[in-house]
Length: 97
Image (cartoon, rainbow, N blue to C red; front, side, top):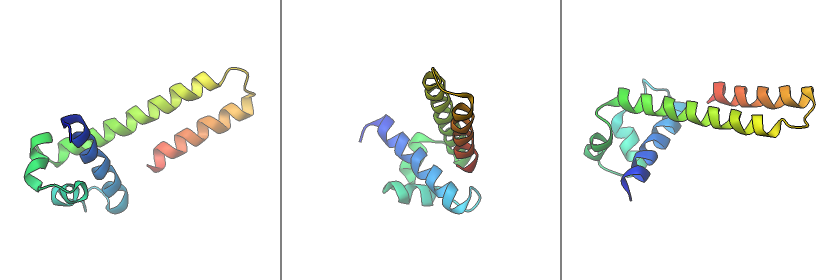
């Protein structure tokens, strides 16, 4: 697996585990196990749990911003109600995740 793909796998696994268990109840070992690698490989990508937590937050914000950009592109010709419903759906998804 390439470096960027493995890093993404760690971030995705951490995000899933944080949703399932919470940040404080998720360990580095849990994240490594979810990815299917040894804990020591985790440290090749992230120096500590705070670093991967920041990466997960950045991933979520980037995803949110991309959804907003897509929503903005789709607004041409939309009525106000549909626009508000679409925006509300994106915001709800971000807050629940």
